[in-house]
Length: 307
Image (tube, rainbow, N blue to C red):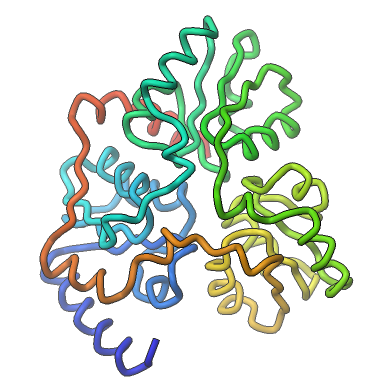
């Protein structure tokens, strides 16, 4: 973005935030200019934690719909705005509450773990939510005598099953459209081009990609690892938004995106102009039905208790 335009929009936003007593939460997959103006930048778990404890009157969520929904569930007394109303998540759409109820009925005693990348309706049908940051701890906290249905990301669920050694994890047939684009061949090609680089990937990637990685972790885990590692070159297997904080925190290191396909169009749909407009107009506002909210809140609170 043009520096003068950024400065002008940023100044306007600063004034609006003060007037509205607003806080801007930005996911690390957002555009660089959004990350620069956000009060908090993080992954799904970190942003959920911020939404739960903020004392702001207005939460401007620069992310996708399920994230703003989660903020509305956790902070029902706040106004939650989603600057780009159409920023959805294809993976979240791969499971519905109706389909989940049907599957639960087929597996007596099943415990449902919902990746936070799911709708409020779906969260209301689950026992506990998780993010990629705490999925292992969430699963490890559950009783061993009852099977687990992990929804909706089969790739994350597969990795969790491997890491925990649990044989009773049943996977939903969902996946992240962005991470699933990365192939083992992409990793091989990147390693051939950059043999000195470590391969670090997100567990939403396909199992054969994860198997080739030197390190696997959540978005924040990958950033922290690369910044603190003695290594100076990394092949990045997650959404390209992480390159911005990596280059800010450790600019002396080399980062190679494993494939140019690692761009989420929904995460990139939010522009700085839309954030300003959203605060000016106080819309689009995200709300959750009180009955659904009460049920979904329990699964999110259980998640937040395990960090």
